[in-house]
Length: 170
Image (cartoon, rainbow, N blue to C red; front, top):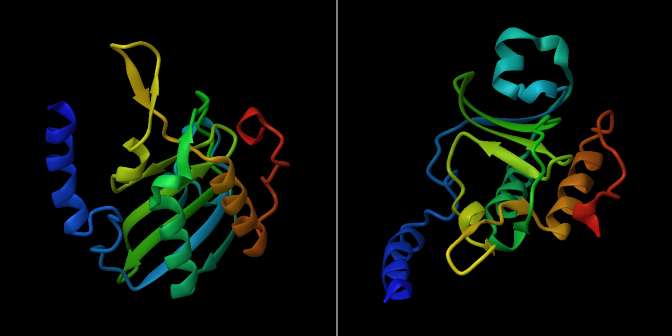
């Protein structure tokens, strides 16, 4: 019965295209940033208050945006655990008329992201601790980590990239 109700609640979102919350976002440009997000500083804070933390940026093509959205909203991109830190170094910011309308901050060290728009795939998989307790497996999969890493390198971002040798990459 619980599965049936969960399925009914999920289907309308999938039918309406809610698996990618950025599909309905109105924007005219997307910029990727490499920045120093230590202390949990998000890109929006750095853009408004401390631009010295930004070391590189690049406007993305529509195909680059599409590829990143497919990667970051796919159910297969999640399923791992996360660490407690959140020091992002890669971010994607959506703009409309030079105003921020959305953002995604990514930390490969802790294996997670922070998004201005809820990404359903981050809650799709669960880690079961007991029959009564489970929590979302919202950490990036090994393959997603590798894709994000390679995307950063292709964009010329390398200042904060460390080799993928953590427990999340085993």
